[in-house]
Length: 150
Image 1 (cartoon, rainbow, N blue to C red):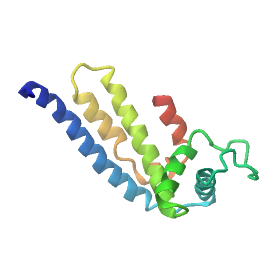
Image 2: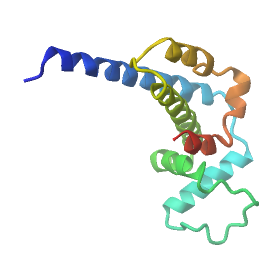
Image 3: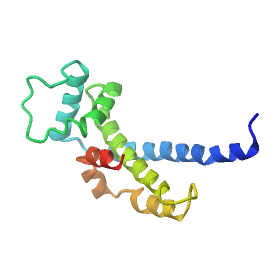
Image 4: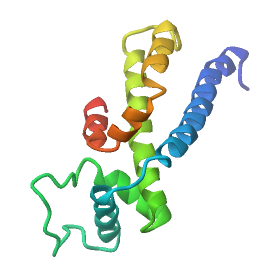
């Protein structure tokens, strides 16, 4: 039997899940407004090739910074859902920024005793709604910051 005190503890988690689901949809459509260029198309192709068994990308001639361990996992996730498509690029960027925001949000819990307070609202206000410039620049190198925050 569940006590009423235990039920109250799960309500903030449900609300946070709903918030992050809505925020993920917002980010998905925000990144859909930014056209994909050749750098990000290459990441989609690399991720699809990795999913098809070429794990070490044999035959690819990559630059000095291939982002294999930072952004490729997110693009592989997008490519697993959508294949070689612009939607995989949009999904990968949404997943990177959403996880960056989530880990930044969770870092605040280490500094506070209350599950949700003014620090969380300030973080949401400052970091939660990126402007068009940030949407264009948040496409690259975000995977590295996700792993740093995690």
